[in-house]
Image (cartoon, rainbow, N blue to C red; front, side, top):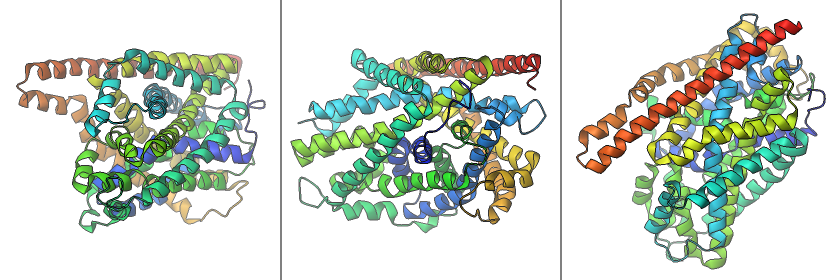
Length: 525
């Protein structure tokens, strides 16, 4: 299917799909925990600074790169980047834009499938009468494959649903889901926020008012605001929440017309994501948890991340509101997470499919089902060996490190090699708003500096990760033979998962090389 046939049905659908790409599980599970861990209300200062100086510029850059490449029939980052500079290595930097989407989708679909399962268990009253430890134990049993049929069933359902929607095309599949999923997500979020605000001490077992949780989340600890750790956490959250540095934004934008607005579209999608994250994401999980568990308990639980609160705790807390509200809130909470997840995972399929269609002439449905098959093969280890750290390895290398690397290189290409004058013209062509001229300076100087600091500051942590420092530290302090055996097996699976990811990256690079030779032979270079 060519770029002339494949297109967005409406501007609203495009913006909702882009916002859905950005709005994901991290808005509701990761952001509140990051804020709590990094100074409460003080975290919002570096967070907003990073959004304005790194997030919005990268949105402008990725939208304009996508539209620019789309004019030449490119719908994936290897040849979008190749179209912006004659040096041949850029297309291999663009491999990150395919690799990241494929590898992230491999574990993200599994995480997404948990939400479907928890919707079912909320309706079937699995958590009724269970203690908090029993609810948490259910989660551990689920990912530990104590109930393998159910775990794999919901994962396959989720994977097949994603693939089927992708097979329907942009306007017929992705856009329709975004038009339904995003309004439902906001509706569910508003309902849950209202329920959270109504938590009162002494009612239904609550020990604090909702205001205690909100104050806990937003009370600034300004003693931490200049800590490099806080700024790195804020920058990381911006990457995570906006889906920049992945290649999916460029792919979506490559299907807009050459004079269509991208500036207002980028701002609309970006600010919609911020509303969902800062307003709704912060208004649900922390106020409810603090209301029933207290600040000390919530602080302890945030050390294990948002999954501990979202899946192991909230189902127990919903039960305190009675049968009807427990079912309703469970469906709304996990339904919200599902729609947040699926609108993001659908975006991960389009760059892979765009590459197969552009370079090898594949039909749309064949490309969609091939993507689904690849996600199945690559994702299976994250399901079978979750407890051995495979899931976390995928998340670190594909969902964190690769994003920073790709974003750093693409901003250098756009601002310094493609050229800021041409880049600014690309951003402002057809714009329905006046883009503040200060962003020309920010994109050329400030954003690369931000990204350079984030990239080089992350390198010591990358080395520690490579040598498995944390695991070996645990081995050095553990005397339990069973735990020692588990840790040694974990090292084996962790290294195997890294090798697999490396082979995937090299395989995609080889396909890009083949596609380049094919283009030269056909006279398309």
